[in-house]
Image (cartoon, rainbow, N blue to C red; front, side, top):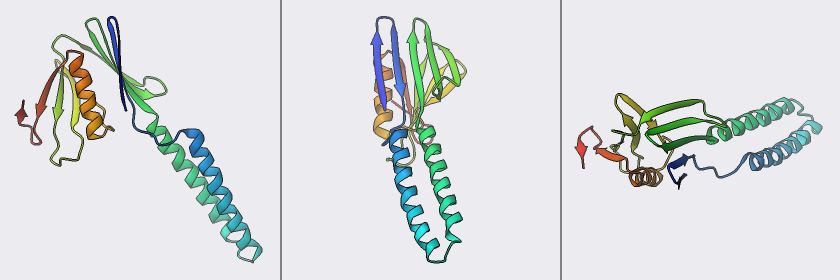
Amino acid sequence: MVSARREDELARIVIRPNRSADWRDNRLLWVVLAAHSLVIATGFALAGAWVILPFAGLETLLLGALLWHVQRRCSRQEVITLSGPLLSIAKGIGRPERSWDLALDGASVSVQETEFPNDPPRISLCSGATQVDVGEFLSREEGEELVDALRRLGIRVRRQGAHGRRSF
């Protein structure tokens, strides 16, 4: 998901992966599946197959851990900010964990096409010797939306073919 906003001298682009459900919805799903699994396991335990209870508990814990892990990965975001002569990039989950400050003068967007037409392009912001990949989790359409938003902000776009050949 790409959202761009411009206010006077400040422009901000926020990039997030698509999330079909938030953490509240995932917890509800986990509780429903855990209750279903434990009801079935209890029925088997009452019939004499008590050994199924630890496996049902492990299955429920593993499902909860995996749902949490996927939710955390989908909570990351990247923020690109243009203010004055600076192009700032911040990446993280909940707070900036890594950040870069690039000179806006001479900055460009490098778009490297992939070999397969349905794969998203590799998008990098470049300035001098610094190159920062952005939007690795975006779909092809969202990647193009990001490139268009950066172009509208006045950043030059350079496209390269699948094998590094430049195409304009």
